[in-house]
Image (tube, rainbow, N blue to C red; front, top):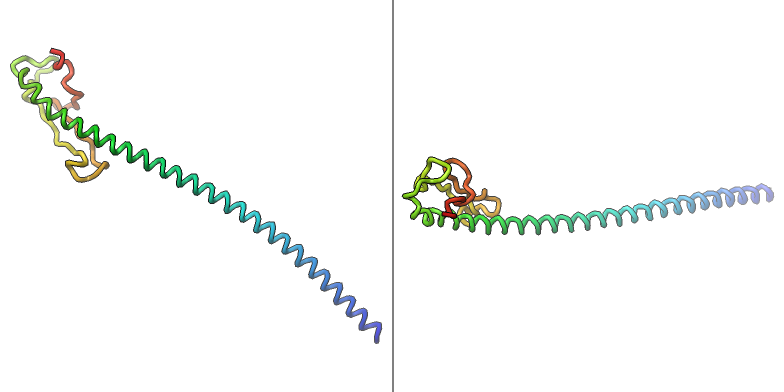
Length: 143
């Protein structure tokens, strides 16, 4: 009877040691998975930081572009307003390359952010000459 009790205790201790070894193995495996997850989180954080920096650069470029477009629209609007004043002395002369006279010049209303209140998303102003986009007074200014 005494021998049987010792044998049962030894078996129980051996089983406990086996369970302990299995638990330690599982703990090591969980630790390895946790470290892998931490590395993955570090990589995700790095990618998010790079994406944030890219978004900031893109927004900065977009803002600079919007300001530049706004400045160009204002300059073009001033030039378009100045064109009829500059062409007034030339009204008696025939226009070069077209049958239209400077008095038939039609200026389209400006869609600059300041004029329309739409911000930088407004369409750029354009001056129409004889139904075509005008690039300035062209050869007329050289006379």
